[in-house]
Amino acid sequence: MELNKAMKMSELVETNYHLIGILSRLGIKGSFAELSVEEICARYSLDADTFVLICKVYSTHNFKPTEEELRQCSVSDILRYLHSSHDYYLNSALVKLSPSLETMIQPASKVEQQVIRHFFENYKDELLKHFKYEEEKVIPYVQGLLIGRRCRDFSMSVFKENHSNIEESLSDLKNLIMNSLPAVCDGAQRLDVLSNIFHLQEDLEHHTYIEDRILVPLAEMLEGREPNPAFMAPSKSADNPGEVLSDREKEVLVQVAKGLLNKEIADKLNISINTVITHRKNITRKTGIKTTPGLTVYAILNGMVNIGTFE
Image (cartoon, rainbow, N blue to C red; front, side):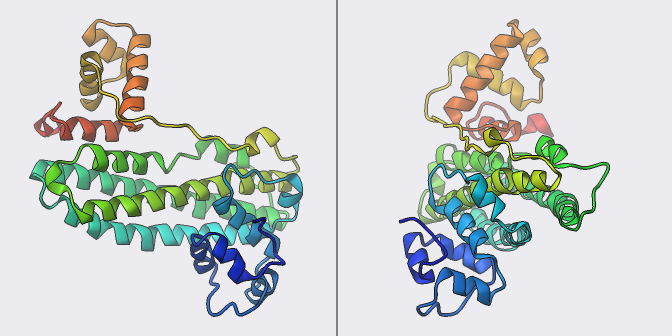
């Protein structure tokens, strides 16, 4: 069903129950009765075209906004949604995940508990810094553009260069829990944690998409530039975890976990840097883990290195 602002709000929610989360973040509540999307949005001083565009991102696989959809969009309401999402992630989603994660790891050894707990705390810090940058730098900058105020030391090009991938570490945590935690942690709690992580990861992917493919082109228009169609196109890499690491890949992984750089690993193992890079790509592909901290935890949980190495 094609989402549009003339349809009933109740019908829109029926198409994808995940859209309830969007309603919550925008402060929309109560009974929808027979009111249309446009009527409900008017009640909450929300641009209906922008609301429908956000819903399409969450509901349509490989969605790509048209230039017309972008030009009809309210930049202020996009900022409103992103701000409320930051609050949701930090003060609801992570708060809910933390105690479940702690309960899940209780049967594990102290070392296993320690590395998972440390990895999760580092991820929360990473997310906090990411959102703080957007709240203190990006959102005020775009708000300034809306009233004609320019900033000499910042632009959307700077934002694109510094916009980190906030889903990678969460994806690593998911793969570590699925594939490397001991069987003693099996049970409903592990499934509950994984369910929460999968949901959060998917939501963060949509959040990042709205920033990269909607906010950035809109802000660039305000800067006087035309939106870049290539940048608006969706892109997503596929993982294929599950393959067994070779002995050489395990050797490389151990050195990565110990903090060695590619050149140092090459010298230590007497192989070329290109070979190290190839092994690291294979390790990421096979484990599904992309970050160095994630690979370090993987090596510890799978008995390749001793946590005493890092003390």
